[in-house]
Image (cartoon, rainbow, N blue to C red; front, side, top):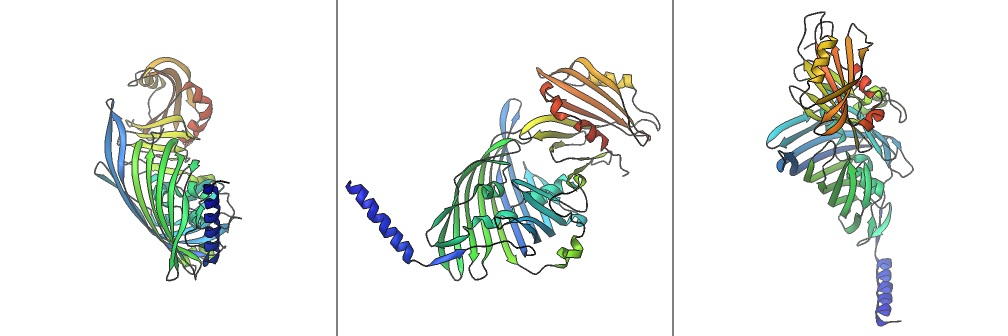
Length: 440
């Protein structure tokens, strides 16, 4: 045996003996149905987006701030001892994002303050029992720090000061807000215990997939645990992301600091059993509750789509959505309000064919299918599916015109690679069928 092996053995023995003599602290919290907590969250984000303009990569500054105050009642808990379904009532939820200095403010409507959040396996879902939310509302209540998994930062056992533990993959995937986890090197350490609180540090790196883009994240965080009440009461989570360009998001470098304050409380009136009668039992929910509602700024149309359609642009002229499935871009849908016709009239089939063949940037080759689509409420829907080229790439485009008896019209274009037509299936018809023409 070498001298180094002997020294290593002595050091290990001394370390174990030292830790055995040190005081241990139980860092455990188990979720129980009916438990209720008050949360206050604040977010401060800064960074840059990197986009391609005229063949050059341009950096666009990005800043954001958000604040949330809500009560959260546990409805279901899993075998791991963490909540799997909760009901939240938001007293306030708002965010302001500035892209290149231009501010956009997001908040929720009063009748969407009651929110259900649940996690089944690695699938996180939020919805309102009152009905579909707008994209802005969905982002405000679903993209803040994930409170269902917050107690997973604890080791759920006794520890001595200086002891470390690895944070579970499922916890990091949830808190880093990844759709899929590739690697996890994040660990926690009990730094000290003073005045009845255990101070915990969390550091390391992780890599995952979000909206089809590769994200490399570095985490430097801290947590505070109250020993007497056996409650995690505060978390400060600093995460720096290096994100590749994805099918629905640009490349970016972002640093976000989230501070979470958490206090146990009695169940408030807004989360009593009588207030939760509209919440579906278990983890099933009507599909309509998870739709995302988009309304044209000028009240020319609205549409409700499933959440796999992601918003990439919303201007006075167009609404652009991309269908992303398991990180892959399946199809892009562009909704364009068309010139209003006289009451009882609309574009003719021949006029629509001319519009399709002369679309900007589109080299038309051949029509694959054309014809009228059955519609209700006196509407007229006509579809043309064609093959052609856009920017030297072969694509299939399906064009719809939807006309209202009162003359309102909208053109919807679905663009995809030929190999993705089968994946789209009938989801183009579902989207077109959900288009409405609201009164101002």
